[in-house]
Length: 211
Length: 250
Ligand SMILES: Nc1ncnc2c1ncn2[C@@H]1O[C@H](COP(=O)(O)OP(=O)(O)OP(=O)(O)O)[C@@H](O)[C@H]1O
Ligand SMILES: [Mg+2]
Image (cartoon, rainbow over all chains, first blue to last red; front, side, top):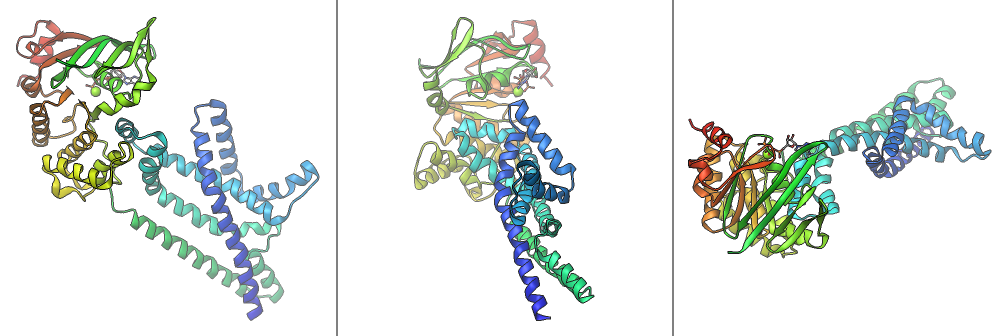
């Protein structure tokens, strides 16, 4: 029993690695994608839109398989499962975060830019001090939902053989002819998401001092 | 008399629609110009070009002796070196206030002083508090814009503009988003500024107010100045002006 728990904790560490690495890369990358999606250059806008549509229009499980096997078929080389898994998650989540950022950016009244311009703020100052704080507040709820989805999506990494929490639980379950490990995994996911949603509630509260 | 604004033959189109068809006027230091006219006549576009929110197509503009753009072979050519300095001489008060919702009242007024004029924290806060006292809002310094009435928000936005010590202040229908009582608050503030000899250009639909404070007035319609001079309030010469002015009689 205790060795099962140790295994499951190891799986959890892997799940958390997928979770944090995905956030680390896709939160900023999503921003770059959002800018591209709002680019003045039509072809850039179109390509970025196509990418977002593909990411949203196909299952993540399929994307995982694609990113794991594509290098092998294309270049005859392959890379390890974990890297493939991170690449797939980052590419997928950047698209989702980009759409959230874009809706946030577009919800800011153009009067905010105009007032900033008339007051003499430079473009980057306007962005970081006037626009971005308001965008962050606006997108907090949508971002919270997406991050919770990410916690659950990490379970999909098992399709390409990454030994994350759910795979460990399933393996143990069939080995011991018991659903207990699956149930324990459920509790683990629930606890992780409980923490995530608490953090977002706190953040939203902290930003609740205006409007 | 020192000329603060000299605008000559300003033209501006959006796509194929010519919105300003050759606007010229000048404003001397300490004077108040009111700009009136029906919706769509180009009043906001005019202010937005002078405050550099839009680009002119043709014409020339000199602000306080510095050229912002000049007409060369039918095109407005901007003087890039002057643009920022001129921008600091002009302030604009919007119809919709456009305060920064995530900053409290004090920070709304200090932010540009610090970031743009590089004033110290103490200096910018002292300046902000002095302006808030003038606007009778000193007790609201730590509140957020959403906690204020429209009239109070507009007074904060006037203080925000004044904090940068502009040479000329522009108002684009500063009371149109306010009900009559709050409108009076704002008109009171603008009138006080006029008495202090602040140079101003005001787009407004408040005819009695405009008549009372203006040293000069222009009536615009479809992108041209139809009539100029304060007599247009009491004794309009043009039929179009007469019609417009009389539509405000109640
Ligand atoms: N960015 C823009 N793009 C296209 N057309 C514009 C733009 N801004 C203004 N216009 C058009 O230019 C004309 C003049 O607009 P402007 O806002 O200057 O009028 P106004 O006199 O301020 O009217 P109001 O009293 O309603 O504020 C209008 O027909 C308007 O539709
Ligand atoms: Mg207007």
